[in-house]
Length: 363
Image (cartoon, rainbow, N blue to C red; front, top):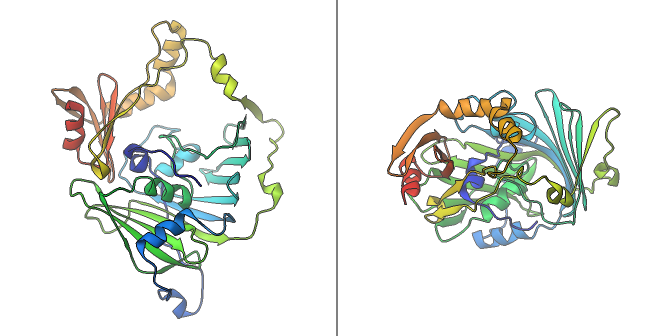
């Protein structure tokens, strides 16, 4: 899977995350001992992660996220957004690079995404809605509002950020989902970042990432963990990647042409973000999209007073106020990322303390 483009808010601000360290259910006491494996260097493990020997598998992934987020608005944890907090379990299937399926059961509802080459389906049992899209096959990219759902997605996000500001080493061996694994350890050299370290468990035979953990600086437990509890490297059946909407479901067709056909004035402009600082100290500053001046007033009212928008506005207003030469805004502090939302419509985020984020706004 190709490396994806990311910035820090995607890296840690959008939590991924995972459940307690898991071992295969075994009776023999020696099964819990660290496995004895041939030595491999950190550079060798980095190469291994980019060249897995088996890209077809199925399994169960558990995620745990504990970032200290405030209570989110009702409905904010629907679907994959449930991965932003607490513990969740997903079933995953993959057949090479172009066919995959991810299914999450949370709060009694199922959210499933099926990708079969150029065809993608996303199903929500809560909404009884299936979204169908067809496009040219390309590497999947997660949006800033989307948390990685598998150890591979999480590992690729981390590896995409490797630079001289990171010390890479090999940790102890372990067993994850009943398989022996090496541990790749990424330590930020900076003393200013909120991230203490990142660990990636690498399957000793297939080189697939089995578990990713992100540890806050100075803490004894990871704030984010995503890992397999069970994995089978047999090829999934072809029928796994075929989807038919249930009877009575609403089906929404999406295509690249849809954006071209949108009425003018209803698509907010998307300003380009700017980065301040380097490596683990990088802060990303983005101006929030605004509806064009010629937008129909009814569209403006829907955007401003819709139920979800009002709920999120209430949450933002409950946060601590910060101010400076750059203006004023609200700050959200979590274990791994700091986010400031300004009154003039900017969002600044990074894996650094509040003073560094505010300094980026003033710069």
